Image (cartoon, rainbow, N blue to C red):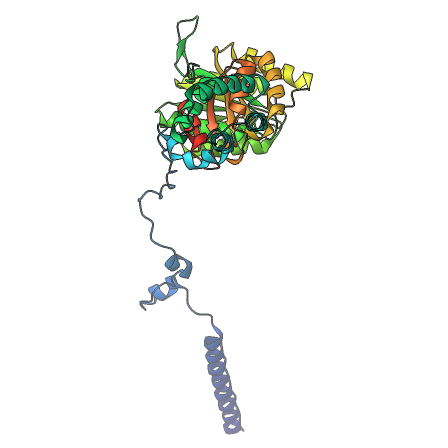
Length: 387
C-alpha cells in the first residue's frame, strides 16, 4: 500500500512540474518587447528608434531667410527731343497744313480757293477769329509775292502758323521749390483737373515720368476718391518710376483731405514736386466745380499751388473750349495739356484754346506709350503739321 501511494505522488509531482514549465514558456512568448531601458539593463545594446519626420526635415542653420526681390524701377526717356521723336505720330494731325499748302501752290488762286482754305481752317478748329486773321495775312503776302513756288509758299504759311500759335508764351512748368511764411521749404504743387474721359489720371502718371526724367523728387496725390480704380492706376504709375502715392483707403473720402495729406507728405519728405490728381467732373455741375475750388484752397494751407493744368481731349474741338472756360473761372488754369493729339485732324484746337483763355498749351499727348507726353514746342508742332 505504501509503495502504491508513493507511486501516485510521483506521478502527480511529474504532472505539476511539466504544467509549470509549459505555463512559464507561454508567458515568455506573450511578454511585450523590452523597453530600451530594460534592454540596456539586461546588457543587450540596441539602437533607439529614430523619428522619421526628424530625418525628413533639413538641418537647422543660422543662415538668414532669403530677401524678397527688389522692385525694379524704370528710367523714363529723356524729355528733350520727344516732339521730334514723335513727329511721325503728330503729323497725323497735319491735314490742315497739307490742305492749305496744296491750295496755295496752285497756279492761280480764285475766290473759291480762298474759301476752301478758310473752310479747312474752321474744320480744324482754329476758330473764327484766328482764321480771319490768318486769311487776311495769307492773301496779302501771297499776292505781294506773286509767286507760287511751293517752298516759298510753305515758308510763308509756316511763319503765319507759328505766329498764331504764339511762341512768346511761357510754356515752362513751374516746378521750383518755394519757402513758406514759416521759413521752411515747400514743394511745387501741381493740380491737374479736367472732365471725364480726357485721360487725366494717365496724364498725371505720364507727367510724373516727365518730372522724374528731369531728376525731380515727386509725390503723387490720388484725390480722385470716387473711383478706387483711379487711385490704383495712379499708384501703379508711381511705382514704375519709384514715386510715392498718397491715397485714402476709403472710397468716397474727402478729396481735399487727401490732397492736403499729399502736400504735407511732400513737405515732410523734402520732395520737389507734388502732383495732385482730381476726379473728372462736368463743367455744368456747380457743386463739383465748387469742390474743385475747395481742393485748391485746402492745398494752399500747406503750399501755394504752382500750376493748375487743365487736361483737354484734342478730339472734342470747340466743345473743349467751353469746358476750358468754366474750369479757368473756378481754379485759374495756368496751362493746358492736350491729349490724343496724334489721332485727330483738329490740330487747330491748340490755337483756339490759347486764344480763348490766354493760357498756353504746355504739354501734348502724342500716343499711348508711357513716355508719349511731351513739352509743347510751337515751331516743332507747326513743322509736324506741314510735314
